[in-house]
Structures are given as structure tokens and as C-alpha cells.
Length: 243
Image (cartoon, rainbow, N blue to C red; front, top):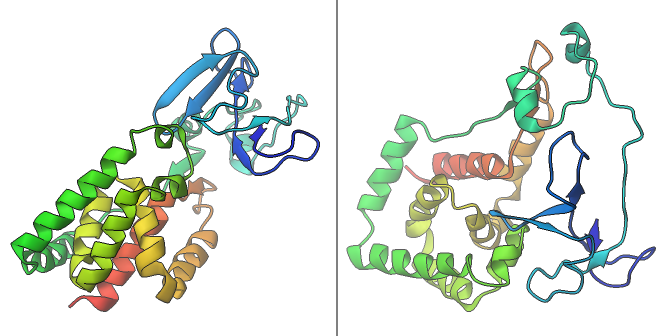
């Protein structure tokens, strides 16, 4: 585990985790492996990333190793699975876990299209240009090394987009909802800064519903993702504030 600030035993904020073979029964190169940002996987000696300005992970402060035990759910026992599960994909393939998929319904897509059609062409064009300018910063250093979505909201381009959205008001929200449905996870920052503050109760509803439905009737564990929760939030806003 990596953290900024003072080294162990008094770390600052945790920033990163590296794994070494065979930590989760998977191969991880000749030494340690890190996933720097959403896309970049690298092999490296233990302290190779220490103090680097780009990633900004800080220093190695803690190490963990397997105690040789594992948690077994009732469904694992029923299926005769008496070993640890290495990855989420394996758990899904075995039927132990399902990922909650959230998407817009046909009616919701129709509503989004209707409201987007009402936006003046020049406003839509400006939104697209400003969003694309911000999106390009996601691949720049040091942002591309980051895993926390909030790190994507520290650029001047992000401020320009936010200011534009504030100026245009709710009419551009359907553009945000549609862009987010295309997989642009850092848009969570815009929702947090622009829409969420006056609608916290809507996200509370989403989280309470998800927390009360952690398992299906047959004992399958349900994984609720960050983008899924925010898409549920967008759906609630669309339902309650757009005719």
C-alpha cells in the first residue's frame, strides 16, 4: 500500500496498491505490478514508483500477505467450492457474484433525445467543444496515472466546462446524462459539483436500495459500481425534473 506524507507507521492519504505474484493466484510479472490510472499496467521493482511526481503515490507504507485462510459464503459451500476466488470475473463465471447493470430505458432515451433536441445548436456545439477539451486532459500527465475520479477535476478545462454548465442551467443536463452513459466516468465530478448538492436525498435513495439488496434470492452477491450508482442518480433526476 502506497501513501503520501510521512512514511510508515504514520502514512498520509492512501493513494495506490501494488500486487506481487502470486498474491491472488494470478501472474504479476517478474516482481511487482501496478495499475497506474484506468488503463496503464506496469511491472516494477518494489520502490520504483517512490516519490515520483507523475503518479504522486508517495511511498510504500504497508505490506500484506495471505494468512492462508479465506471467507466462504453459503453459496460457495452449496456449490462445493472450497478454495479462495482470485478475481471478480471468476466469481461472476462461477455464479457467485453478479454486477448490477444500469442503463436507460427506451422511454428514458426518448425523453433525453426530446430535451436535447430543444437545446440551441450553438449551445450543444459549445458544450461538446468544452467537454472534449476537458476529456483530452484525462490522458495528460499526471492525471492519466490517477485512479481517483476527483483528480480529473483539477484542470482549467474542467472549470471552463463547469462554468459553462452553470451559465446554461438545466437545459444542458441531458447532454451530461447522455455523455455519462457513453462511459465517461470522470463526469461524476460534474454531477457532484453541479447537480448533487441540492439532491443528496436522491443518491441516499440509491444507496439505501442497493444496500438492502446485496444478495439475490439464491445467495448471489450483487456488486454495485460507482458508475451504476451515478447512472441511477441521473435516472432519478431525469424522472423527477424533466417532463
